[in-house]
Length: 440
Image (cartoon, rainbow, N blue to C red; front, top):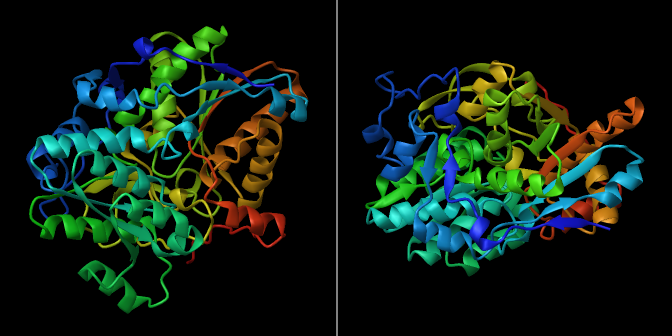
């Protein structure tokens, strides 16, 4: 039997938490790839909405007000439930108390809408008429397509080609909302043509799709690029998750010893973890923070910390990050949202300072964990969220061995109802693990 903790509309947070301003050691700045000088708001505004560019570089304001029109949109689906996973606890025989923040319940099925709405709002306020982006599994593309329609913006999405083939219905969702969807790499941009020329069978990556989206944004009048993860302002918008979870954990009378989320670029991890992390910084809490990434794309556990491009073609600013290299070609795993070569700037600095840890998890373990979760909690999770579930199960099993009654909180960042082809492959025994191969 699940136990759900809900907030009233009046209890919805009205400010985002800016981890960048609260960090004792600030990350190094983004660097212009041409001049090699730190980027300023004017420079970033060539690509992003100006307000997003301001938020990206804001090291002063710990709290940033959520615009009232954005709050009104949030109220359609927020606050999301905090759930005690009693069924999973019983199946594991663990003394641990397992909670999850259920971001899968909103109309788009994932946490991505939390940033799509404010980004489109800011674009509309600035008179922008077109937005463009990349998407892997399609959750971000779907969220942006819907948010763009709310604000009357035209939307173009470059979806990673292999993910488009694996999850065709997410492309259908985007088109239903009125977006133009193109498989990446494509022949519609110079970046895409160059990639296909070098490797005609390239399956695509978030890096290739970012290159194409940025090229479109910078060559199309009145168009801005929007990003669904990695950057500071995206994690900022997602802190609505953790700020709600703080209040809900208090309702449950507990506080997490361990906070876990899956990791692609850092948006849902930061969204859940950062509000709790501030209590480690200021209040003497000792919560552990774990980011769960694919074994086939392990930038946190086996990447190198250095400046690197956020995309394959080298259009983005250079970012200080843990990276596998911007030309890394990821394996065709079903967690399309986690197939990214680098980690966000804030998360990279936190990892460097030892304030969090990364774990890498093989594909088969994620689906085994997802299946157990589905059978005990009645929710089929997205393959991305299954990484968080697998890491949670690992921690719960350690508690069983040691007898520790720890409180574990993880983010269920999306449902898997459009990922059933992947579950079919798993149930039929056709899925395999992909190990990271540095030589490739």
